Structures are given as structure tokens and as C-alpha cells.
Length: 448
Image 1: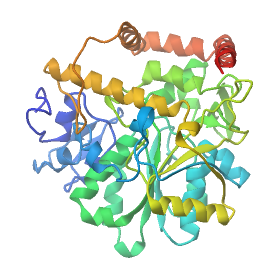
Image 2 (image 1 turned 90 degrees about the horizontal axis):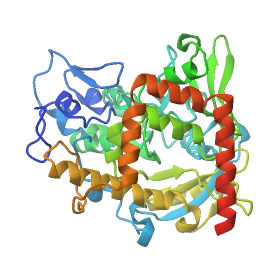
Image 3 (image 1 turned 90 degrees about the vertical axis):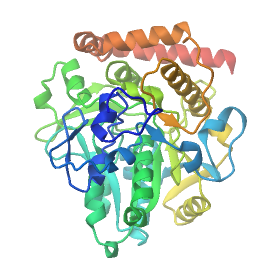
Image 4 (image 1 turned 120 degrees about the horizontal axis):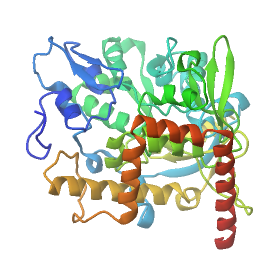
């Protein structure tokens, strides 16, 4: 039923949601289809085949057109004031894995990777649903990791859209006796998983823990081919893209057969994750601009980089990185304490407002901007996602927002985007990124 808004009637099939531009490309519809009638194209969008009997389940589990965020998030103490969009928090800590290898290979100090390994080794889970490199190409894919090695192989940030939830079919047909699983997910994936679990109790029984990653925007799948091309490397000559390889905050590197690497963007130029910011302009998914949940409010744990500056204005996460860990449930807080006592992680408790000097306000700003965009779509009679959050009065966008939207439209035109990435990832472009980071440090020192 493409062309109708979610506010007027429910959708019947997932491809209708995609036709209206609301698909998140989480893949949950494919993983839940009882007739295995949904396949995914190279763009990650669902294609419904002839086996479909129009049962409507794929639309009911879809988080793209509707999600009750306020109802579903945890009923725990909430941060007030400017950090209200962060969601429920029982305990806030600054953590990193004590194992140097796990800390370096994982994101944000390796907390999520180490916690999954700890749960596996202590018998709390039988495996972990993670996103790792596909053995056959550069795009990631979801898999159930059942050993420490498999969890480590999937460590690291995956800034790329792919049908993550398609693996839910494998999980549902597995025996309950195989044991519970932990899940690492970004917000849209967590939303789809929650809707699927509400409709399929057999799936809900198998998910014991959810580790949520903060997310502001995900990238179109072809970003993994555009990045090597930006540095003059043939896409077929590159395998997996390591978006944050090595010491924090990480370099962007392409793996090349048989076992080599090519650096696409240096660690020194990547202060503040400049490379990802460049990619968002050219390959960011437009639907992400309508997401009010940057902080992954449904998870047991939500994790992000701290982005805390020292007296010189430099970000202080150490060479291996650290992560701000929001424990959203009492048992999550207990697990962190247990891991600290066991020597698995180094952990220092703190106030969320102090540990989230940038991410806290960003959560608030992203929610406000997403709801303003949704209100404008609703006023214009265009398809919009429904959340159980109050919408502001629709008003004209600010000039800066109009300019940013116009720039995104230009850079999503492939030749313009390719030129932008080639300049941004060139040696000269990386020099500009280093200069920009130094300018921000000087500005911070003046106001600190």
C-alpha cells in the first residue's frame, strides 16, 4: 500500500514500507517471514516473492513505520533535564577491557566484546548474535558466534547497512536446549528485535541480554566500495573495511588479499571520527534522520565513546579506547560489578552528565530534530514513522538544516559524492581534517 501514510492505515507488506521510504533495512521482516518469501537486494531493501500469502507479519514486525519507544524503554530512573533523551539509567561507568587485544580490536574500549566473551565463558549464554565480516565479500553479515574466537573476529564497528535480522530465522528454528543468546545491535535493530519478540514468544525466550550501541546514522551498503575507490584502489581488490582499526580512535583500512592492508584514512586525521562524518554526507541513510533513539534505549547496556577532552582539548580515551557504559537494568549493573571484580574490565563509576559531555546533548538534539522532521512530513501528508512521543508544532526548518539537507542531496549524486570522498580521503583532505581538529581544540581551551 505504497503512497499511504502509516498514520492512516497499517501496512500489509514490508515492500510497501520500503516503497514509502520508511524501511530501516534491519532485515527483521525476512527473518520472521513464515514462508521464507522475503529476499534482500544489494541495497538491503526487502523483495517479497511469490510465496507470500499476505499474512501481514512482515509489516507488523517492521520498526520502520511504527515503534512504541516510550512504552518499550526500561522503567528505571531517568536522567532529567538536558539528558532526558538518553533514557533509563541505573548506573553509568567508564569502562574498558583489561585484555589489550580485546580492548584494541573492539569498539569503545572493547567492553561489549569482553562482556560477550565473559557471558559465554561463565555459561550464561550459548552464543552471541553479532555483525562480522562476510567471508565472501566486504559487506558485514549477522551470525551467531559460539566461541571466543568467533566473537573476537566480529569485533569492531560496522558502519554499513545490511539485513541483520535475517538471521532470526536461524535462531527461531534452533532448539531451546541450545541455550540463550546475547545480542549486540544498533537502535533500529533493537527496535525490530523487540517487535519480533512481542509477536514470537519462542524468540523472546532465546534472547537473554541485549548490548546496544549508540548510533546517529548508518551508511548505504555501497560505502564499502566507494572508500577504496576514493583512494584509487579497485573495489574488487579490497575485502573487509575496518572503519576504526588499531589504536583509538582508529584508522580506516581496507584488507587486501592475501592478508595485506591499505590505509585509507589515518588515525592522526581521524580525531573525533572525522572519516565517518565525511561518509555520512555521501552515504548516510536518509531514514536515519527520522530516528529519535540515538542512545539505544531498549538495551540492557548502551555503549558509546566518551568524547571527554583533557586540559589541552584532546580526547582522553587512552590508546586502546574506553567506553561509556549505561547500565539500564539492575542486573546489568550487577554484571558490570562482577566483571570488574573478576578482572575482566576496568571500570570507574561516574555521573552520566559528566561522562556524556557531547553524546548527551547530541541525543537530545537528534530526538528533537527527528520529531520536527516527522511533524513536517505529517503536515504535508507524506509517509512518516509513528512513535509514541509527542510531536512539536510543525514549523519551517532552520536555514542551517535546509543547507545541510541540500548538501546531502547533492553529495548523494554519485559523481559529486565520489569527488567529495576523493578529496576528503586524500592526503590534502586528511591534512585539513587534522587542522580542523586542532581548531576545535583551541576553541575548547578558550571556553573551558
